[in-house]
Image 1: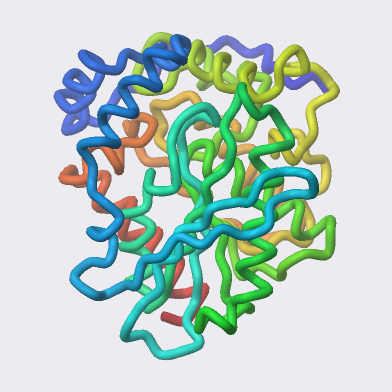
Image 2: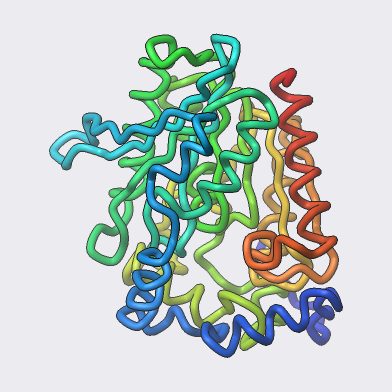
Length: 331
């Protein structure tokens, strides 16, 4: 069955009214196709990172101990850096969120998205391990996901040493990090690796084919449009992007078997490129007999919860994630 739908694609769904002025300001600096110019995108990201919080600020006035640990990477590859943010007052053994950062596979470091991961960890009295993976195009697939997997294996093997519960590790991330988290769940299942409690997939980047109705609808609009998406996937996969030679560990939407995966939380905005591939992934988990909770936030653009945290929609999205984690982990 062909992947591309043949029914007509209508106009793009409207953005949430409260998000419209925020998006206007964002697009003045970061237009929808900004990430097609990798050098400029990295320059902008570096300037933002330099103005961001230092590692000490992630301790949150002593709520967490923060330490970078370098652990063995994939065979023949460099060590992997993990940022360990472990709760100081939690009852051991505590749950862990193993966090992969966003950035379209081409940008970012282990501090991207970390404040939100720490918020969620505090909801359940847990900690966060955030992984630094090599970026494309300098390191194409499978380098990035193998870095993440090596760090996950180390984390699971050393969980008790860290004070954590190895049976309550949740993989998670946003955008590219959400795609990597989904891939980690597939890898752990297929390799007989760590037994994961759940997968937290926030607007995950899952499908290299870039041809869904939402990708077409949102071209030139919002944040991370079809042009940026093409650039990110091409950086990761090169000429293989869009062909039949793409691994599900690179693009989890390619997976034909979604059975026996840990419970998933999937959320995405209705007005963003990844909407349809994320809905399809949750549907595939259900079809395979698995458990998934899906939220499509009306009028949300890509990353709206990070870029407009004061809005009602962002507050609802964050609350839904926290509720899911508490149910899953008993926090």
